[in-house]
Length: 106
Image 1 (spheres, helix red, strand yellow):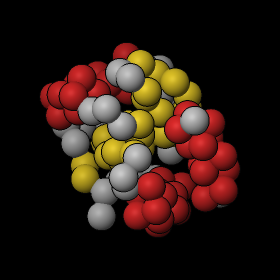
Image 2 (cartoon, rainbow, N blue to C red):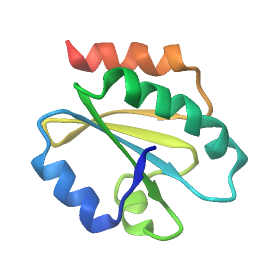
Image 3 (cartoon, one colour):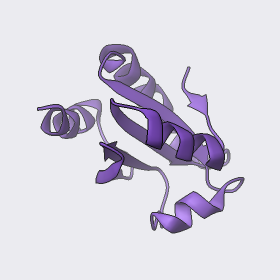
Image 4 (cartoon, rainbow, N blue to C red):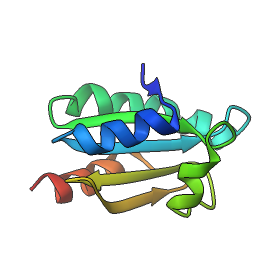
């Protein structure tokens, strides 16, 4: 299961991780966020040695969503070396996420 983090945990993880850091921005009521949850869990299981993945509820912690201009959900932000490297918006396939990850892992 993917851990839901707070704004503080987001900042701490972003500063401390040497892996790719993916953040799934979601809300509890969003059916598209719910649809993406199993896909993101599969990605975590297959890439856990290379990637850290967490979830951030934009209703509880809107400050991070505003800072990174997350305007729709689901949105996954990809951070590399502490900097925003890319974003994945909307409902996408596992292979679409994997293509992005491979780009950032190389």
